Image 1 (tube, rainbow, N blue to C red):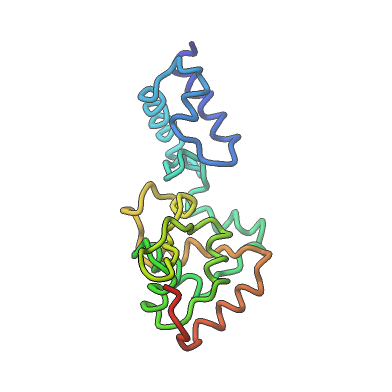
Image 2 (image 1 turned 60 degrees about the vertical axis):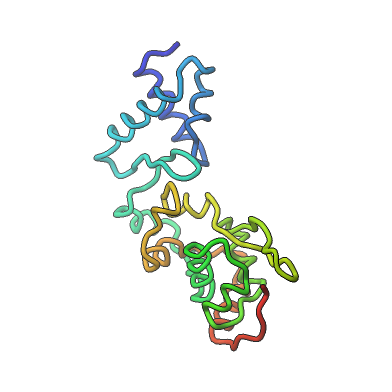
Amino acid sequence: MPNPSEAKRIIEAALLSSQEPLSVADLTRLFDDEIGPDTVRRLLDELRADWSARAVELVNTASGWRFQTRPEFQPFVERLNPDKRPRYSRAVMETLAIIAYRQPVTRGDVEDIRGVAVSAQIVQTLESRGWIDVVGHRDTPGRPALYATTKSFLDDLGLLSLQELPPLEEIARTLELEPASAPQIEQQAANEADAPLASSAG
């Protein structure tokens, strides 16, 4: 069994090499259960403290632990990929915000709140980004789908739970990435932001 110092370095290596957040259960498997979850959590806290004065921080998100660039350095890092940060339309962001704060909701609920139609393309944009998913169906005629945010949505905000949701303005600033393959969806969503409400989907 590795000593605590070695175990911490193993955890550090795993987190730095992973493309996705790693849970305590994932990290425990690194040691064939020779080190328990409580010890892994303690080592993670120590590792987070070790990185506290650096440009990269260790954070605990809904899906697990990961290293990420500190917010104050993110604008500089983004200069390496200046063409990869088009913004989402107002319609997409409003729809996401309503789902985040009122979930679970149907498309009809979102339309009632926004006062304008919500196209299937707007919903598909959020689903393809991994920020929302269908979590059930309302027991009303037509059984409309109920939407809620996902762990990926919380991960992208660096949050553990919905209780930590920031003000709407901060969500809009943080979640502004637009999939490069969806320029037509973006334009359609922008147009529909000012379209009259035609009908309710739920």
